[in-house]
Image 1 (cartoon, rainbow, N blue to C red):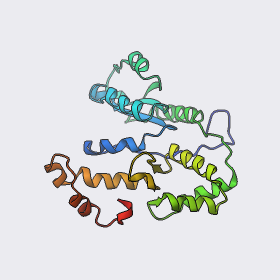
Image 2: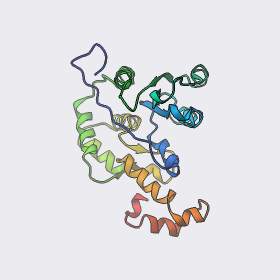
Image 3: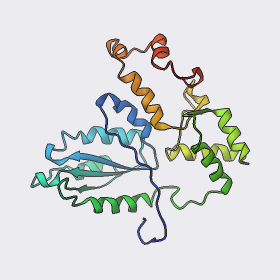
Length: 238
């Protein structure tokens, strides 16, 4: 719940970026503008091992308006947590603060939860009242079984719920900004597809990133390999 608003509940979606290094390229799909990003690192291994600067560079490049919280785990395993916080805040203004938690006792977790609620309450769209027909269209989109729709199909959903073309564009951008869906209007041929299931997109990218053939070819993905890796997908969704 946001501070001082006991009758208001925040609904947040969580993206977990923990995965093999080969998937790190796909993480940028989940770095949206309207988000609170928790950059978690092991205090026992030191901030260098946590590659904080590398992760913060990625967040700054892909999601410059997101709020960032540093969370040091295993805080009870080291007497002093060394962290160049002043330098980090200077280089990354979106960094709000640094917090520590104990993996043994859970000490500090409630503090992190409270900070997440406070910062999330400041995000754009929080508390925004949406027209009922916008919510109806959003619910239809969210209940769609297919992981993607063509732009024309999505426009039809919007029109069926009485959104004007101008409203449809605004809502589409809002849903993209909230991480509810993905679309790439400037990228051909993806500009004609709306990805409704972001995690599904990452799974498809993962097929490529972990393909032994692609790895052996030093990252070169041929048309033949595309057809093999995504043989179960319709051609319109490739």
